[in-house]
Length: 421
Image 1 (cartoon, rainbow, N blue to C red):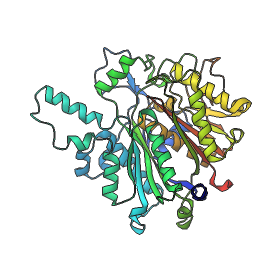
Image 2 (image 1 turned 30 degrees about the vertical axis):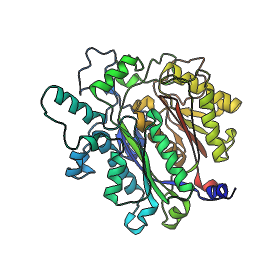
Image 3 (image 1 turned 180 degrees about the vertical axis):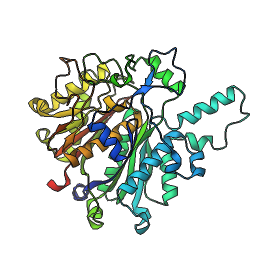
Image 4 (image 1 turned 90 degrees about the vertical axis):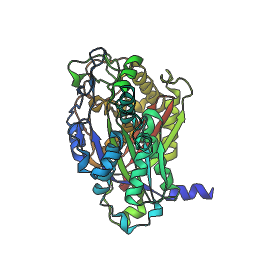
């Protein structure tokens, strides 16, 4: 009982944001692109897709790692790690956080990634098979390992608190943020740098997802392909990117007069234990995930204003998520504003939930909801308000973020206006 009391007394807030996405690099560019319905989806130009049904991706454009990372470190990091380190630095700068004045043992890092350094891994294997290399690069292991991002951040910033990496496929980023939230709420850390990052746009990975037939085949035009909750949706668009936030105790944030975007109120996660790829059709486990998060936050379903949906643009996911929302929220489900960021940036796997969290926090801060673009055809199974095609002004006090991963790893996070408690 005493432990529970301690937990609830440690309020946690978001004070810094960094984003690397197909439709914008940096918090402001990313936010403006989303509220204006700008897609980052285009034809892939990095590998041959002539023999594939899908020919489009969500690639990050004009990313220069050297703007954020020293040249020596750039050579030691896979693209996914470069994204993550860059986004974390943006978040630190945005949060005006000077770590040198703080206890390094009370600061930690938690990073989610579904695939880790798969780009460099693939390049090394190809070069070995073509005999361009006699042996792997000496840095191969550290460039490929999923925890290279958290390790690099910890070493460079000399922070000695929790150093964690989480890999739960498409929910990795949200699981990382939820875990970081728990650490601060439990008083085991004062500040956590948390988020998710992914760079899966490789020939093999794209080919593998193409073989699964989970990606859209609507290639023309590319920016219209991802259409979550639309009746004609036929699969997701594979993409890359990173989202990082600074989480800290409210007490710490107030002490340094930090800008607060939103408060993290609760977190829930569970396993569907149903199928390695497909969601449970009745949505019961997704419903339970959201229920656990709201219960943890001590928030009633009727008090939720906005949901940043997992919304992948697949037939099965969008149907199951909609059903879960209707089952949990009842009549209030039809009063909710729901939107899918993936309509504009595609599905960036381990970064998806982290970028969704950023959208949720900025929605609360600005009382403006980004749309679900490309929504044209009504689906009787998806009959809620998905904020179609145009941003919506609305006072947002409570937002729910969803992320569901292959293997049945589900996560939901509750955000709120910190001024209302």
